[in-house]
Length: 67
Image (cartoon, rainbow, N blue to C red):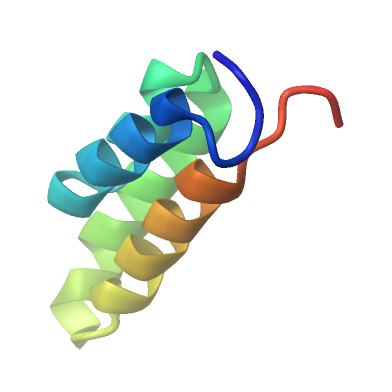
């Protein structure tokens, strides 16, 4: 995938909008995808899952593979 602001990152952010961590999985970041998916699932029981969900979207959109 290309860098920040690319169409790939937009697609990844849209995927993370629906399922936290899915955008990271599309970007090839398996560990981050699993971490965000599990954290969002656990924290939804405490009504705080939206924080991880939002973090997942922003993280996917701002990902820069050069760093």
